[in-house]
Image (cartoon, rainbow, N blue to C red; front, top):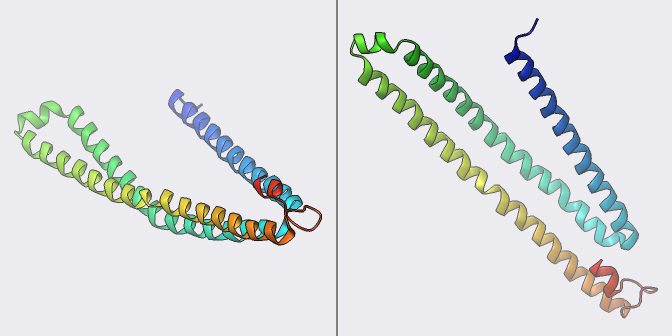
Amino acid sequence: ALGEGEEAAVFAYGNFLQAVINFFLVAICIFLFACIYLLTVNWKLTLLLIVVTPILLAITKVYSKHIRPRFMFMRDKLSEMNTTAQENIAGNRVVKAFVREEKETEKFTNISGSIYKDFSRAEKFLALNNPVMQTCVYACMIAISWIGAHMVMASGNNPDLGLSTGELSS
């Protein structure tokens, strides 16, 4: 039989997977329904939006490729630091008896400093993600507004001849 800790871990993992699957399904549904709605308004402007989507996915893939190894490395370093701390706590009397307290403190400081540096580097790289994504999204919005405005002017703001201001703003 599983112990309480293992049962809690399995339960937490199951909840995590359920949340991830739910998130992806909701995101895909929102994207598909938004595309369907936009196609009913104007298919030309929808194509512009659909073209940007693979670019955003590629940017996300590049960031994931660079960030994931850094976080995996930091997880291993944290594990090493926790092991060292547990060993020191369990063998506290032994460490003090052999006058190794300063050495163990220095070892712990080095590991925690390394984790801090690695985490800072990863977070700096990760901090670029949001501005890059927002730039792509805003560029797409500007392009849709620009092209849509030209389409509205070309149709004379008549929905029967093309795009109207109301359709563009929706």
